[in-house]
Length: 360
Image 1 (cartoon, rainbow, N blue to C red):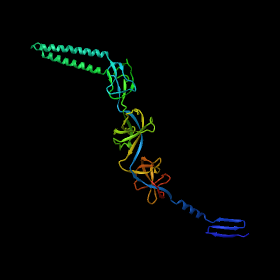
Image 2: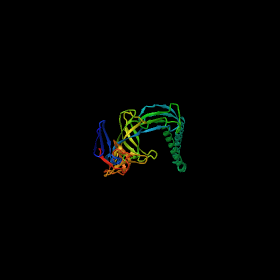
Image 3: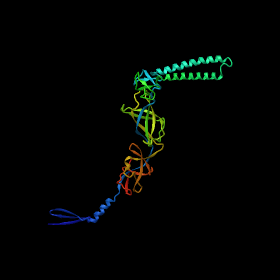
Image 4: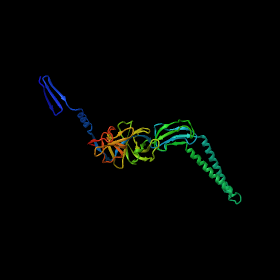
């Protein structure tokens, strides 16, 4: 049996035997460890992008509630019986329209008594004036007392007439009767029981939106805002910002803002829930990074900055608004900084990496 031996590159021994070819490695263990260390020490490649300055223009979806522009509960002002009622729930009414009439027999009797006393005092005063034409017959003080008494009688009669006006219930503004609580014959007492009616103005509505404190800084009157309601899927309505509270609720950390909504066709109704597309703007450009660049742990929120020499650094930031695939950030970054596109806490500070530019 013949044997041939050949050394290739000083590391492989080949034996050719009649039974076949056998290959033996001659690499030493220390040389294998050196090769492995060389592979481990090779820097990791990461995709990076620069921090950019952009003008924030986005929308936040906020809840809102539609309310009547004007609303009032009508109560009786005097104790009386309901004699007649001319409207019911759902009826549209005009300003000044008579809705109900009340009767108060005691009030009518008191007015008649006051008018009779006024008439008698007028006659008495005329007689006194006639007698006073004769010097010394009537004291000046008696004449003045009679005149004051007559003035008081006139005021009392006028007061009764004004009170009787309360027996007619009229609509204070144009609107719709949304509640009716009484029927003819009911005894009505001021300050007790339920209201006679509730009138709401529906041709114009108020849309009340609780704007979060973070978005309350740039609210401006006159801005047109879109919203949707579940009653009309896929349809958009608009309102105009008119009244801003300028005070943040300490419990909810929101600021109430009112929008005027024209509702001539009365399709929208008070009490409806609205989803408002609230515009979020900044007065100046702010910093943005890819949303995937932001890392959140139990200890901090950060992005991974890569220096010019490829060294990794964790930079704590605060989140702002989201604009598409971008995240607004605030903190220790500068527009010239470079951050890792896909951040991970496995990329520890001080690690060396090979940065590859990616598209923002």
